[in-house]
Length: 331
Image (tube, rainbow, N blue to C red):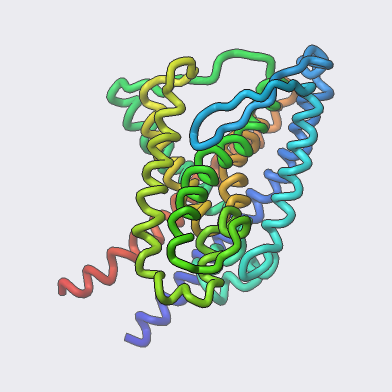
């Protein structure tokens, strides 16, 4: 038994080392993508084509699209939101139980679970897991003839600006204003004393700070689970609603992504959910668009490999972790 325990500990440490290397590589490509976005929007021929072009500002509230009666220059809106993502990325790297650098240093000793003790590494882990799940569903659906659709051909600079705005708008509209707002209305009756703004930004962490948390923690999942599922279904339907560019297969893919984004929001907060969504929209697409329109670095291929490797390792690790104790009990 002691030898088995030692082997498990060694394997866990080696997995943590592999994850740590992949995490560092993904963070490096993320930082590089931050540079590529403004280059595409401002320094390419297609970027010059949209100079001075304006668009109406929109946001989602409780899953419904609201278009505000004021417009903004597309490039100016992009750069202001780009700065917000830089700020979120930086804040998340220092928030959580540990900083990002501390997590990577301690992971070999503490194991795989340590990566969920920093908000940025948790966001990257959740993103990678979601990417693997969505890809698996896409492969199955394509195999049986269920199309998901593709983004229409458009100006690449304008596309980067559009996909940069979506995570902020949609996380407010599908996570904060559905899960957060409805959960807040419910817990007001529990007399938790949790500040409303803090709860909306970080639902479960805010609840856990409450002195009365032990009195109602058994009810927490009865509260959050239906809201996470409902928000995810709403998110899935929104992707195939009339006027959408996507086809029927996108419903299941967006619903799975919505479930993971809901979990990210509840467990970690709005910042982590936004960063996961941003990774799907801006991070991966910016690498592709730069290589298509400017110069082929092959970085998107390596980025995909890192993401899929990390997601697969984490999924297999937690599947084994859940199934192994059950197998022992049956014996």
